[in-house]
Amino acid sequence: MFQQLEALVRSAGKVVMTLQAAGDQLAVFVVPQGASDPALRQPLVLTATPAELDEGFAAALLTYTGSHKSLEEQVAVTAAILDEAKKSQVGKAQKALQGNSKKALPAPASNGSAESEDSDEHDDAQASAPAPAVAPSAPAEPKGTDLLSLLG
Image (tube, rainbow, N blue to C red; front, side):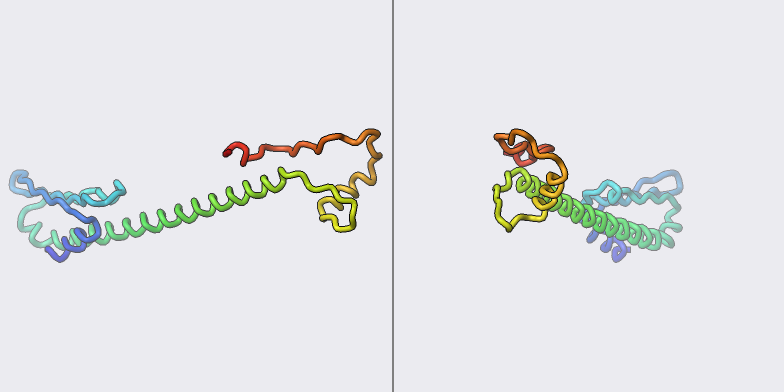
């Protein structure tokens, strides 16, 4: 019986076992204490005659410990998945912030032949439209919210 308890104690950290008489039967409460997740602290409660407990308690405890271990592994896997998703989202947010800060900076004006593809597309679009009579004196404000300005 203590070999089955050892596996549970090692996975939970601490286990409290309580026995209570209920007529000619015994109620056995096995409660893992050390787990941080509430699902891993669910007690095993068995009520049976002492003879039935002698015969079946070790097997019941073994089944409970296996389920507990399986649940513990599932919680660990889920936590790892959530941590990775959190890291991924933080990375995406940082890239988005860096991208927005680069877009917020005005591009240097150049009339040379070394223009970017964006300015080529912009020039093509303006070539088909008539030129404005008066050139704007200030660069156009970028559309959207500069997220870096919110953090600073």
